[in-house]
Length: 213
Image (cartoon, rainbow, N blue to C red; front, side, top):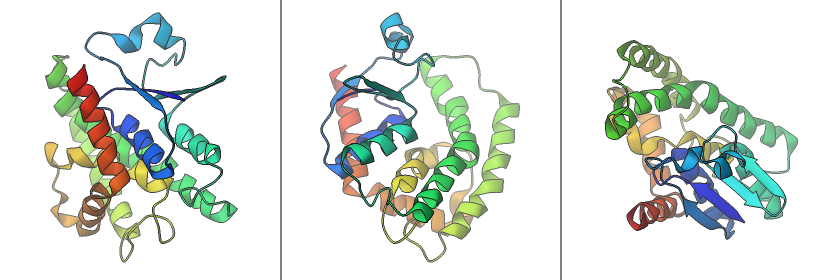
């Protein structure tokens, strides 16, 4: 298997963490965003969205990190990350869909506007867009915080794909202008997940790719 990533990509880290958790091996290739690697024809042929991560496994080419992670669980022959019970699977999927459509969509947009744009010299951040997305985080953070009341993970009693999806932006928590202090459960959850072996090693792997570039 070959995984195409960007060193700073939260969604790439999500997939590397699941590879680590499952004990699967993949050749991890770090692309250079600034050099235009994601827009080169050979990469766009793999993912017409020109985005990472992309997994290539023989004749299988997959993009979208949550889809890749489900594939990896099946590749591993099953895992508690995505249990076979259809009710539990639906719950995992529910939180994956929710983070994409609501919480991390807003969180990620604020990160892009306030952190990524200045870093790469893109157009100035859109204040209106950031204000809207900060309001969206404020709308959805209580939902996540409530779910985590008395819970260590989102679904069941152990880490699932839903958790690796939900925490993909946790390292940017203090980089955006949002008051997280009201959400003790989210902070506890982010801190605990940050310390897990699979997630920590994923950060080290992507950091090493950045240094090697």
